[in-house]
Image (cartoon, rainbow, N blue to C red; front, side, top):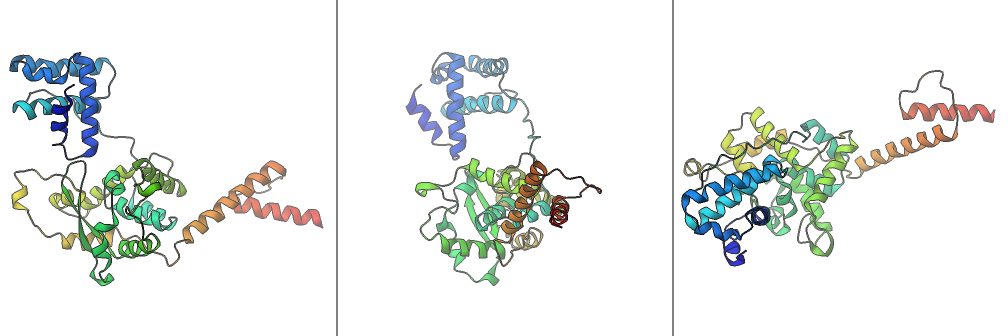
Length: 340
């Protein structure tokens, strides 16, 4: 592998995740081809077109998933096009939709919000706006300092963030709730660089951020897989159901606009859509951020008591209990009877 050529090509890829995936694809290709990838640059056009097809078949035979096959073969064709300026024509497998992503609803997110601490509330605000998890992990306080100096009546306010996957600008917004949360959290974390910061001043890993969303989901009874991708789907669904144009939705989600359309919507104002979505996506902020955690603690204590009661005390229920509280009440009555 000629690392110089490979590095030259990878530097043109804006997304850190894509660079990593493409590097891995090259390694897989060389396992198949048994030669450095640069060798395909020396082949005639007719010969080159056969190579990706054979690579595709090899990946299928070795049990790779269709989405992985599509990614690996695309990487090889992009590498060739970068150096030779020619597009290799090949029919790639269609993308398989992620069917295991839970279809979360807005009322469920609002319920999760009640049980969240301040950091989790901020995370949910970005979740419901359709941000990608990696982009959330890279959010820095310096990008928000100017907004945090404004008056609350000035919100919603637009904020522009560069996405890592597609390398395009995402035009999202901060509403009054998120403004108050960020301002309070910043005062508690004055020395932090990242909004979601782990040890040694590094950003929290994407897996940890998804785990927080998963944990909040379980608190309200969602036991299926839950990640930031569910938030992107929710945001897109909310936009469609409320008549927000596709171009505006794509701009707010940080998705690339077709090059033929981009000149016509350059600099378009999204203010009215920010105001509309601020109302729809409003997450109610309670005066006590610990209220949800207190409710959860009481529920957990009740469940623990019930387990202890059922394990240690054999009681007969004349009327089947409806919930944990019914069992605890019956137990207390049972104990009072014994004392008498």
